Amino acid sequence: MARIDTGNALTTPVQQPGGRFSGDGYGLTTATVVWKADQGAALGSVTNRGSTCPLAGASYCDSHNFAVVYDALGTATITVDYVGIDPTFSGGTKTVANTSIANGLTAEHITSHPNFFVTAAGYAGGPLAGMPSNFGGAYNDSTLGPVVNRYNVSTQQTVPVPSCEGYYGACFEYGQGGRFIGFVDPDYPTVYGKTQYLARTTTYSGVIYFANSNDVVSLYGYLGKATSSNSFGAFQLIPAWGPTGSNPVDGSNLNLLSQVNVEEYGLLYKVIYEIRYSNAGWDAGVYINV
Image (cartoon, rainbow, N blue to C red; front, side, top):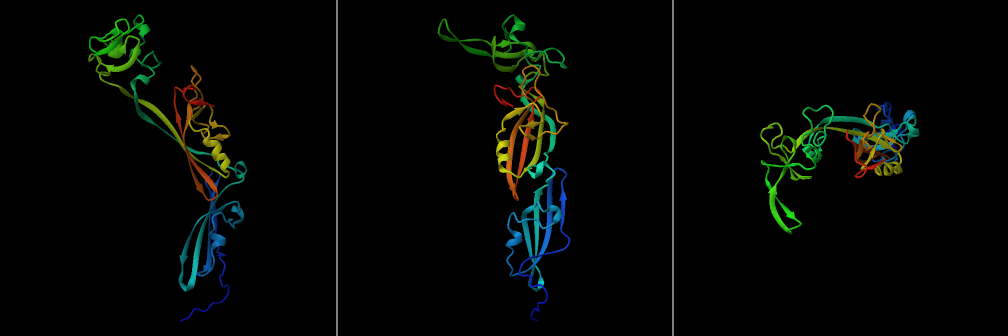
């Protein structure tokens, strides 16, 4: 039987009841609207990326993606998703950063241990290796460590000499330090042969949305830089409860922006970032502190 058309010819999409929108609490609003159209109708007015959401409460949202289902009797159902930033959040220019924090342990070289060269609070038994000054200006010759080849300036020859040893059998190439060889004294089994230890590590990861690409470029400029506050420039990326500050000894800032990944999301820019926290701070001679 041939189709008999009555009423609206659906030559252009017609909005259907039941449109909805919701906010994530950080400023991002998503909306969904369903349309009906004839299968031969042009759909560009609603499926074009960036078309305006028709819902009164979400008119600041723009289309992100769509799906089309071809129904019976020559009609089509078009479902369009929209996304935008609530104008009550920074005037609709950016959302509040949604941040999570991961805490754990990671392997680090033993020489970076805070109690390796000098005594650190909370650790028992004194420093693991000590400083040459603890031994009259130079570590003692080791009877357990390997023999090392050392160039003699006076004779202009390379000669084998003993390596040097600090506390707990910590063995070095020279009396003044140099290359750390390892812990060579089996009388200290807890450190014997060890070159690494498990250090605390804290990493922030989060997402923030921008309406303006200039903000994305500006934030990217802070990649590899460390801050003492919860912000990088105008962008607050660390929540109020997150640890911030700088090392009281040398002033190195504690939080380093280590990743800035960007993808387009509708007409917005979705930025996924990572921040690495260091209790000792990020040396201002190595990393720019802001």
